[in-house]
Amino acid sequence: MATATFDLNDLKRRMQGALSALKQELGGLRTGRASTGLLEHIQVEAYDSHMPLNQLATVSVPEARLLNVQVWDRSLVHAVEKAISLANLGLTPSTEGQLVKLRVPELNEERRREIVKVAHKYAESARVAVRHVRRDGLDLLKKLEKEHKISEDEHNRQAGEVQKATDAAIAEVEKMLAGKEKEIMTV
Image (cartoon, rainbow, N blue to C red):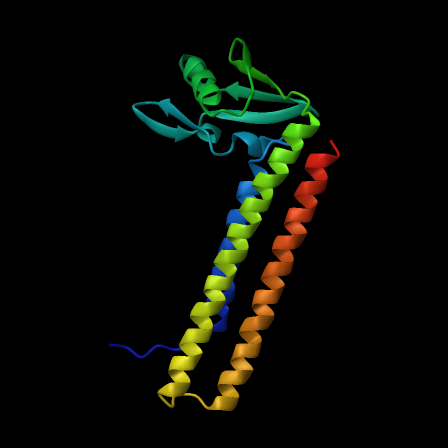
């Protein structure tokens, strides 16, 4: 078996993965303002398979509370409408030819608070993922020191670097959450 080596850049990359996942999850939360990110995850039953909406149509935001979905193939308009309805976004499609219009309704205070709670759950999941990466890194350092592949000083120095990377990633999670919370509550 190959010997394990410590790679701080690999740990940082894994932490970035958790941040990317959080960014995508937060982007899918409805804020009362139209955003193309609302429809990013929608899969449409088309051409005998499931396809992402963005491969079948152009999504645009002509005004603050309206999304336009320009379907390229007229025969898929109904399938796109159905996929949007099934996505449970609280958006009702209205169709004019190959253009599907989605009016984004105003959010009430209670609904905004619920969405903020969901954002907090997403952020906590990202923090947990980052901490798991930190734990993996620290465990590997401990193992390498125990096997006398690195010195105690090297272990401590590297552990400090892992903690710095963890703190930076957690700070980024907090920044993303604060931004999303502000966006949700001040629409």
